[in-house]
Image (cartoon, rainbow, N blue to C red; front, side, top):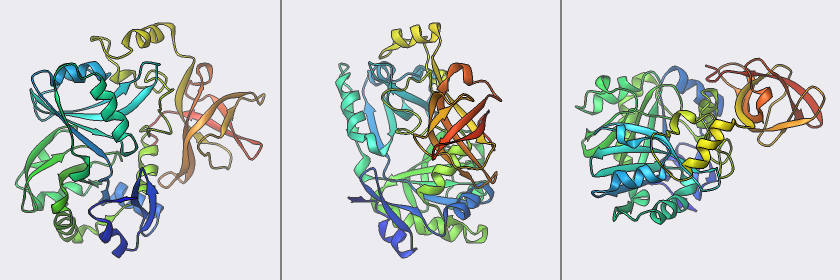
Length: 358
């Protein structure tokens, strides 16, 4: 089991630690609901240093990225970030990721922790362009400072004008006395905020500086449990749950990052799927009757026939009701469609809703 550079901080704070993607990670501190509401209403800090980071450098770096990703990275300019995915050759998804353009010959990719080796091997397989690929995951720390008060806290620690940064842009600069910190206006909560990338050696210094700067805002550490409930309220996919090697980006509602203005891995097959129409779709839903949907629970219609399965589900701390995501046959995907979640052999009524739900 690997540890992030901040493991001692988490233990000192009384975090409940669990194995996740090969790392010993904090799932919660004072409780998932309290941490969730802290991020929605104020500001919280996530240690997500388990995520993977690659640097792609070379004259043909963009050509390689265009080959392996579904989105059109040619529209990126320096300082811009793009959400994308790595399609496989069978219609599914190797992983979803962020693509950062440092300059015209240098790109920074952020991938899911559980897929670091898999993604590196996949991208390398297509590297007929002589691109230099470096995996810097082991030496890179990542903090996500999220919530409406994040900018108020972080601006105290950097000369970079955070208020001028648009969503999905980034800058490199000094932060908490540390040079060359990558400050990114991104996040996985839908609550606003920033993500900070830096070398492991500065992790405790930067952590302490953030909490000192945020004392007046009652800043709190937040674990992976609340990260999951926050992203689910916004309808953000989680790899391994809502998307995987067998789900296509079109089925998952990710047509907006699947650009057929270029050729990429399996693009012809995905283009044909788009033309024919998908047979199943990922939808959001909220429970009408009492019950908590869980991963892999069957979704059935009014006659009890299985029409899909739950991919993610929880009790929403913001809405005080149960919500979820799942794949259903396309005819049941319209907003307002009545579906039922099979929970302990009982069909519990739910309704298809538009995400984000908050």
